[in-house]
Image (cartoon, rainbow over all chains, first blue to last red; front, side, top):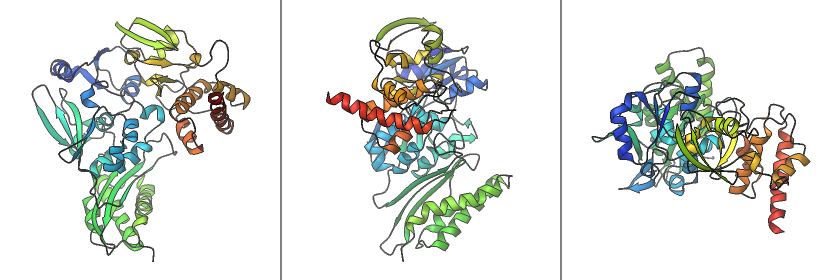
Length: 287
Length: 159
């Protein structure tokens, strides 16, 4: 039994008021799949748990002004079941498929996955390639926080204690995009914490050269990032084996420039390059 | 203490509970339904799987307070008036039980799967039960049991 008080939010306004007064001693509870693990280990000892998982305002998936809005309390299973997500953010759907187990997907939320700020959050690389930002509310107002700004370090969320993520705003997949993928490597196939993860979107012009590319790497750096150098390198080129191997080397180099050469680099450097090549190979023209 | 109302295995309950207990503690310690097991306690093994509003969840990662207003099914709710549920029969017939510790969780994951998708293929079955670990490694028999359960359920519906 945990020594904690539980508050079920019945509307967003009350939830924000509660945080305005008690934010510093409160953890926001949605799926609870990370919070209960951290409370059990003793790493987390909040006085209050504010349950926002049933707030309808946080559970919508909709298009607004051409942008895809995903409520923070949408579960991973709900992402998987949404036709809108499949059409507009297919890499996010692929990440949802590979996310933990059925039991966890049924309760874990996209907002929780992002706000937990684990370097290996599966939804983060797909959100990055859609230039996503979070709409963050307080009782006084709202602001936008980009996904890259959300984590100030591993497991350190930059949001203030009186703030709630209401939803994420994504640029939908451009119509021309023909290639989308999310890949991850873990210690087993299911229920694995990603050791490395990556998401990409691309389209090729009539000559086969890359006209548009987005690429983000997760798990390998303290906070996940879009790798713009790799996007720029690929853009304008017709993908061939040597091109994707070279781009894979750029991914590994960039990762090492952020993390330094840690002991795991012996494995990670070739594995990242290999995973990137495997992911991008469908773009190589069959000649 | 907080008040919660819920339905468990078809029975309505209204209880005052401490805010800090998990759904698993409520089910095992307060309601004395010992079929639901605690294995890892951190959502990796699936021994505590229950079905909440039709979906399989880990009872160890949920607060009891979150069950308010929900409908819950535990392994004790499968058998009806003394007759095993077809999924339980399938597990018994295919010897999908060794030490038995993972069985309640696997039965509940299978129950939720078949309610969502009455005709799952092999890879859909693997995906649905991959959050349930069997330390005796009896996965082959478990797969056979789930496949048999699919057939039993289909036959049951035809009757």
